[in-house]
Image (cartoon, rainbow, N blue to C red; front, side, top):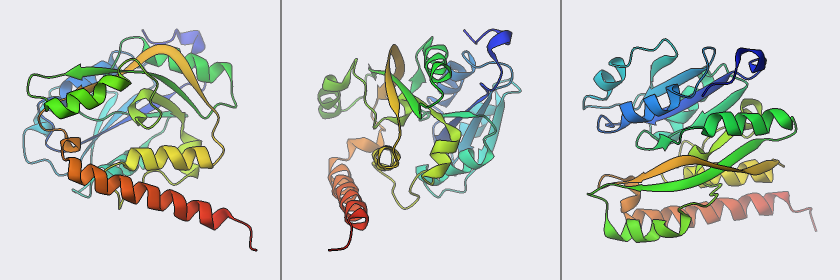
Length: 239
């Protein structure tokens, strides 16, 4: 349920959904967001060069709060950054096109942010949603996060937009684990965050998840660690 009109001052929220060839799930993702947004909020669906019926699925949603943008096929990080550049809200959230907002999450996270103006982000719990074609190994790997707060999954959070801009958004040369890289940079920048007692994100596992490629994941983890180490070394005072 959206906040009541008397609570809407300075609460405008922009939600960014990057999508490429996501016709199977993107409309469900968009509706799960729109059902919780207030009239002054916006949903920015950023198409990253889809060649399926993604655009048609989005155009089938009749809601003035939805804007469809084009990112030109440069990857998920660039698509998120395109949406971020267009965002007008004081608060911003990110949702992958195959995931869902859990009912009641936005009201709870927004209330937490309004109650403490020094907070950078509010996180809710992640619930794992398993499709019939999900890879067994991925299903097993996700069992440990079901019902947990996972700050590397940006879809489970609500952020202050100015804080996201301050760390430069998402690394456009990273196409996997870019969400973890963003989260680490935000914390290194002195972010104050809170874990809220609410289910926030339905994290969907299915046969087409890019994270089904374990070799690519391992390589991305190595790159993530390299970047963290490089930043840490850059902050050390000279001997």
